[in-house]
Image (cartoon, rainbow, N blue to C red; front, side, top):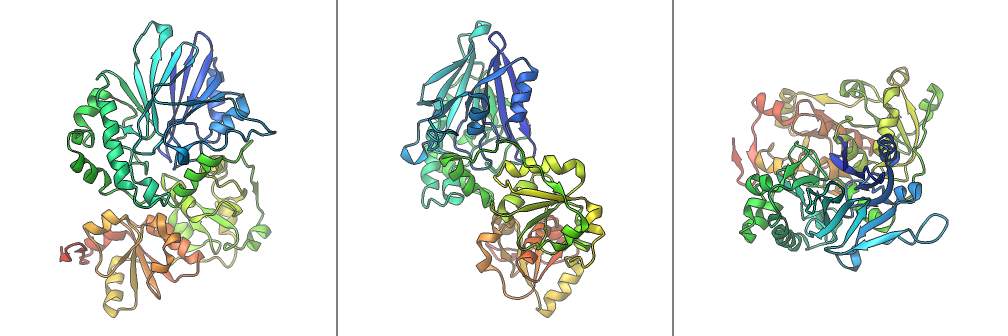
Length: 480
């Protein structure tokens, strides 16, 4: 049996290629939208992709299942659990007409790719339709599974969060019921043999959980012993309280991903091929009408950028910031090193931002006249300004961070939720902060684009407290 994980560091997402080396057939599990990577990897290992499946309707990236079926003719194996609201609605929308070759799976359904069997196990809670797959290599003489593809059900050290249908998709009043459903699903997992390998769909950094480990795989026995959430499998009330507490605010784009993955991801066909813009073209860009995504180091952006540009680092914040701040219909221009254009374009199409039309190198922007700047102050200066009362403070950390300690009087809105909560912003000039100054820098770039008067706090909350600034515990209003 061939098994290879294909990992996206920025989305902390794992797809899997599983192949039968005797027959040369392979299945791709939970593919992202730029499917050429999986096709090339399979081909390099003497395999052809004949099947594609996914564990659930994802919220953090656009699925590549439809794209893969179009490119390779692979048969689709998709969940038929979860009720009418969570059934795949695009199976009769094949390009050119007709229906995709699709098999719908119920709990206990199985299919084979060569001598490899995948058996579905319905494990709702994270989502109603969620399934895991028990994997058995019959070609190797095995009669029992060697591992389980757990999707967003069981991670290394965590479980998939059950609140996203409410907090991301906007379906009110379902998160507690989903948590109880997740609790019930645990019985299926804990009944499995200890030796089974656990192959999850996410690792550390994913917003689909709150405490995911950075280890790529585990075993059922290890997770039963050391996964804190699974350790509460005997106490439903404590489990529900624990699994819902402290979950990070989901990026705004999650709601859009969920709908598109259910109703039909637009076919990509191939990566966008943005062209390099010249100085005259750059000078004419209106940053309010075109999304200029600038990934230069923060000091360079701060000291001079095209007005209206959005700043983001290129780590896991890149999809969170761009997905939350840029609309799918907006034309996009990248400001980055030439070697990163394809990488960042792939990152964008994975979350449905397809209109990547141009790019400019850092030196192209630095040579322009009339660049905008972003004000930034240190903690000592903020203390002085707060004494004079001429600045409001916006905290763009997660709510759980703000509740632990905060600057008195600050307004808290997570940076990935800002566009949806503009009506809650303080009036007048604002100083924006986070823990270390990075998330707040992205937030400042968005707010400047929208016309707000903002200043970034260099070093964030860490610098504030190091400089002797007072903080409170908002729930108890206690100074520390």
